[in-house]
Length: 505
View (cartoon, rainbow, N blue to C red):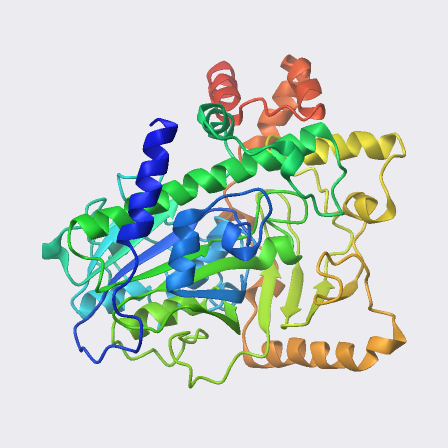
């Protein structure tokens, strides 16, 4: 696609998706179609959230004509636990789905069910993915026994969806779940940037203070924003498809990130860039748009919102609440967790309010920079900053990520310290705040089960590929390890294929 074609498509999508009835809620009883879009590994790094240097016109328009949520937070900062809570309406730690890509052979315990089971019972066609976008749009990635297509009874049948890829008028009412994978780290990041006719200028990006400011890190950040712009273009393709098929007006669009950005302090961590998610809801026939919503929202809440929009009574067991109902008592806090991620077992918990974040690190001896093998391939900034640390060129804030231990407890004032630079846990001026935040922590644990506090059954956690690959590279291709130290992403997929071929694994 040429740059001119990209711009033309963007303009057409923006014009065509201006809703024609947002003055008041519709009184129609017609079941709405639902397009649920998960963008991988992003925080609030869109133009409509104020991110510098990036252009996201499609999502900007979707937000200004719909509702942009400013305080949406993930219940987990890693994809599969987060997707598990969104598919069930229950916090992942309460259904034993907290460990990344574990428990895939263990059925959900009764009475828990995937939301698609309720949608199907209500007459919905459940559609997975779209062939309009690149990558694995059919991603499910939940931590309980399931398969993509087929029936569901939770005992012998575990299918979540009815069909893949194509939406048609005959499918109405439909629930379509699409994953935009371009923002997930991978070898395609380089090619997307190379093909772009309007690359983000590294000189224009604004780095958080916990990053070292180097050309490689600026280039990596710009490359990330290039993926955001491509993802915005793909969102335009999905909306244009609805318009072309005459399905736009009665379709509710829910756009959210599955977890935070894939970089320092982001994905896998309980800081702001790991938990703060973009969330936009647009429904021309059903909700009044045009204003930002400041309510506290958890990632799990999208499940209740989907069921509510479909007119389905919410199961009594869910911990989610619909964000369509302004009469709901607003959340005071969002409870988040970090547990197993590949070969690194951790156990951290966070309570986030609209002003503060409290973090409890139960395994403080696990460093933030735990040298997780898979991340070694996809974190240029970490490699560069390790080298600067050895040279004594990082400041105190930047060094915190590389400390051998985490602090046992952390408290941050998000309004006055949005980058979470100063831990207030021992500040006497925040004693009452700390007491309140610990009260929220106790409230959640008194009223919910946390399977993450139990010893892990490693047999239910398939061993990751990357640690073996790292050891092989150290022996057979040390030059690749040196490239990684310079911030060069060597191509995980290609190297892993070569490793498997040479070791016959």
